[in-house]
Length: 327
Picture (cartoon, one colour):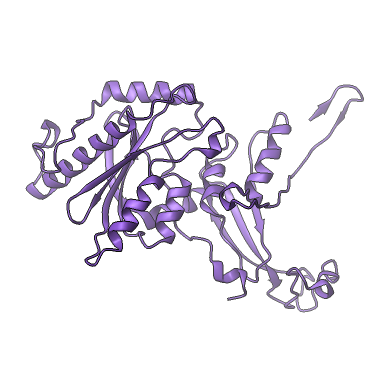
């Protein structure tokens, strides 16, 4: 940050943030997002080099899904961004600085008594952003205008087979050279994708945001449920399409003969496939649906190459709640 008045250069090397909560816990903010927001006030910043997360827990805690999505969406991050999670206990001298241990906190600046370097070594884990938040939205780091243009270009190159026919709909011409098993899978994927695109059309609030999202889930009994994003003027109050499918998924799973989701697709009005966003990833992975298949773009280009992954692949290394209590 150049100061032209006194010709001095001020370099800010880091920002910090803390979590805060509201009575409605979904409105809470995590420490990572709190810190990232401060970066908007640092001019001429080139890129974020490292994120360090320290928690009031014996063991390191991975960031939550919203933290990961926010990091992935920031213009100054990159897939190889280094992320370090640290616990609150030194692996050498066992100094414990968890809240309520004021006696140990007072020793924080003292040298480690069991280390040759005299430096405390907090239990820690190192990873990268791409490792903990794979398959972000194809529109990541784009403005709404840029995302709309990309969607239009994609739709022009890839006209999806939009159909509300049953899953047994006939195959489209681009899969005529596949084996019978591959053809059936492709039929299922394209038909369910069409239903997700149709669901997106029910979002009529393009005055708030130009992208419409719809989602469709195929159950083990062959039935399908759909939903669309419900936007609110304050974006954080919006309901994403996939999360709105959860009540239907829960209801079927609780029946006398449980019926489970087998394939989930979220798409926009252009037919661009979007993996579930952070909230839906967390809900599905933490509530027993981690093995449900999810359609994603393997490569986002004019070839429209799609593949199926599982929910657990989209939410790796979930935060360990047991670590909060010393488990």
